[in-house]
Image (cartoon, rainbow, N blue to C red; front, side):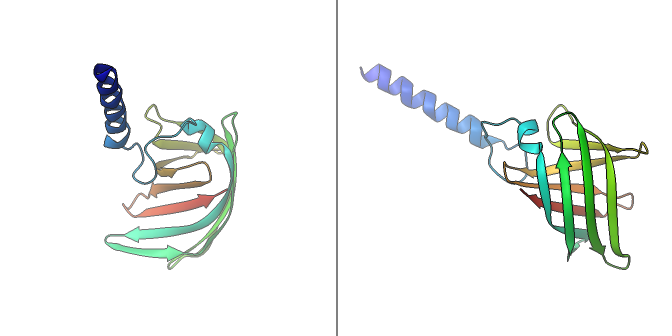
Length: 145
C-alpha cells in the first residue's frame, strides 16, 4: 500500500515538473488541453500594439479585427497609430501556417508578401505576437476574443 501511494506521488510530482519546467510561449500557461491551432483559430479583436525601438517601448493606439480560419486562411483589418507615421491600416487576406514548434506564425498575403510573427501568448481568449521589422524594431500586437 505504501509503495502504491509513493509511486502515485512520485508520478504526480514528475508530471508537474515536466509541465512547469519549460514554456512554449514567453507568457501564459505552460499547458492547455487545446492544440495551438485550436486556440489560434478564432475571430480576434485588436486590444493594442506596442512599438519598440532599442530600449524604448511606446504603446500605440490600435483597433481592428483578425479572423484566423481553420482552413489556413485569414482576413485582417487592423489600424495602428505609429510614431512619426500616423495611422497605418492593414486590410489583407491570405494564408497562414504554424512552424513545427507552434511558436511562430507565418502569414502570406494575397500579393505573396510573407510576414513572420513570434507568438508570445496564446490562450483561448487572449493572444499576443511580435513582428520584427527590417530595422530590428519590433511591434507587439495584443488580441482578445
